[in-house]
Length: 456
Ligand code: NAD
Image 1: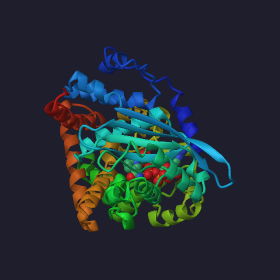
Image 2 (image 1 turned 180 degrees about the horizontal axis):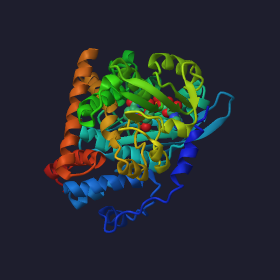
Image 3 (image 1 turned 90 degrees about the horizontal axis):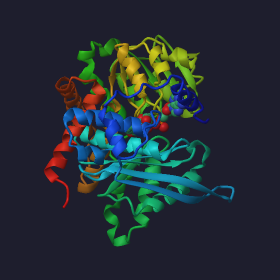
Image 4 (image 1 turned 45 degrees about the vertical axis):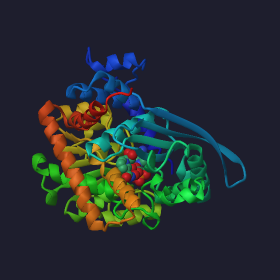
């Protein structure tokens, strides 16, 4: 079934005129210098604006701000794919390499009908920030193909993946740019990606090519714990923040948008710690059960039916009703820009924990803050995925493989330290958590730029 609700939420975002930027606000000067005509609804412009506000707070040099306001490389490819009925369709793919001052470019590949250049650029910026915040030696990138994977057969998906990989194969590499799964892609797609890249490499150099992607199946060099990593990282961050938020995990109620990789794992892991999932919204509908929804049973249902709609031990609710269900923690773990001002006015929660990338519009963010609802930002909460991707890359490089408890222990350390960094930055810069998380990320990038200087 197509993601029919996305259009509704996008339309929703346009209902209230967006707040104008504060006069004399620095990002406008950088926008002007780079000849970017600011569009308040453009996710890339929104993202850059938030990063530049934080950059000014931490005192990042002007030329460094300019470098971060534009990706280093924007690659766009068009390629034909043989469809099952014998005709060829032409697809458009992207790979945006935002910044590699901290290490090789790193970021997922998305298959979705709404993939666009500016969207991928925004997600690539977020990857640069995320890797820096959790202190892993990677830069930021993102890629995608404009397609609806739900409408493609397995064979069509494989041919599309192989053609896309071959189209960008000269632009990626195990020590240069390392893709991973994202919305609409998974471990199987990474396996086809790794195999295609290997086939395009002379045989005597092939031994180490599997590092070109992470999120591979464990049998092909993937790390144990990668599947659950984003949900697990979010749980570690939340645990670190609970005291401050005055929430008790054992009696905590939470709701979720999205029950895919991030939402599903978050639900199961929080459930194991005693928290109660009371409502879920996905592309098929919304469900509610005040006494608690069993995440395992819901996972079995979504695996069979493709969505949460029709889950027996719950009542179906309207989308707006879902947003207003009182919970301690509200977790958006689906698509970008879903929490518009209209939705933010409905949310009854102490804290919004962002599992998805950029799930809150700037105006939605302002409404939540006005209403005293704390926001734990995406670059902190969903960094667990790229952290375990880094572990996979390190394990591939050394050919030494770690057990699950070792992966968890290392992940927890990265996530807890990142959460503490954000808490400290909030105090230091007297700002909200989102600005603090960008600030903590930018401090590191600024230091490395200062140390390395600008060639020549
Ligand atoms: P996924 O494809 O596994 O799941 C996406 C979920 O979103 C599904 O449950 C789907 O039903 C739901 N959804 C789609 N359209 C919707 C709509 N219009 N309304 C409500 N729900 C809708 O994707 P994922 O891997 O879980 O990723 C979710 C988010 O987390 C994305 O923003 C992604 O970029 C981000 N993220 C994922 C990872 C990862 O490791 N998978 C890491 C970091 C960030």
